[in-house]
Image (cartoon, rainbow, N blue to C red):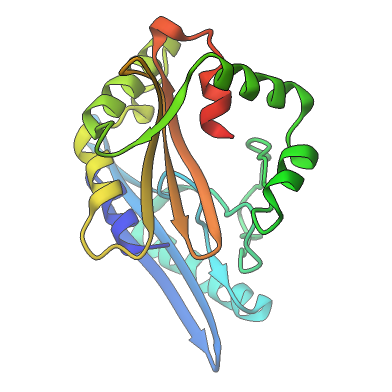
Length: 239
């Protein structure tokens, strides 16, 4: 929901961005999204999508949400938008899910850790036995944590795009170095971006970006060194 995050995603997807808002007394509705123009033959089409990650509408009142959804549908028709893809936030009490002219589908299951608990409680109760064993194996194998400036955005971008190429992913999942740089180091941003990695003998085995905003820490993207793809370093990194 932060402007810096929205503009970074708009830049790399060659899109424009908009925020649809409404208020009533002390209640509010806020919906940030990207608008993409697609040219097919001699025709132009425009669609709406959430920025990469989780966002969707945030609303403090169900009544206001219903009223604003009607107004938003009218706006979409006026603008000739042909489709909309929303990634709803996974754990926000303010999430408002559209109900009209839309279909809600399960995309994936997510793991949420309660970081307000003691570390030993998280370790014993929220991590599986298999994951704990793999983390211990990573430590015993001499893997160590690292962060910037010891590891760089250039290193992460290279590892990430090589990882995506090995999986044969669509172009949508490729990001250039400038995008990661904007994400992590944009000036005056209201969230914190962190790049962490696992190293051994000065070699980067895996790396991941985490974003922090308010009480939320979100694992964003990760990549592993394909030369060492079968080692347990990724479990250590994401734990």
